[in-house]
Length: 199
Image: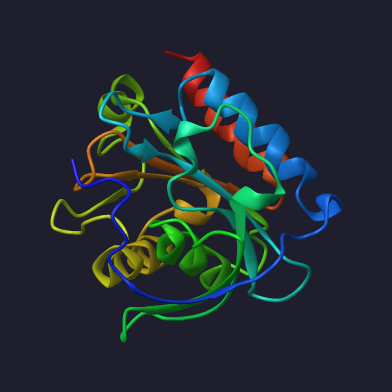
């Protein structure tokens, strides 16, 4: 699996961590999902899953950093702020102690496409992925994670399906991969857990 490999051009400015008050919800939800093995790392050490939150009223967002799936508990040093992205140039700008997650482009397009989205969660779970595949909005099998194609697929699903209402995406070309989002991080998390608890 290529999970964790950054496929976009990252313009990363290494900088001090954000104040804890901006990260509290993110850390609570991320550590809870880690405990359920929805975010974590495979036996080969490659991490999976990530979590983000819109920063204020801008399109900037805070996201768990690349390679953080191996940590049971995240700290301020494990988050990055994404300040701009250009899908067609496959380029993303971020700052923080760690480079932004390899899935940042997919998170970002949800914030720019739907202005009411304030929290996005990406997890891996094979059983849930298989159950929901093509039953909820599902990306093309040709769209790989972290690519402009995946970002464009998410935009397409917002336009052509009931994604804005369902608030869940299954990634056909990224086995086990699922996204949920909401008007808050709590909504994104609860949508995910409702599906997870129905297994």
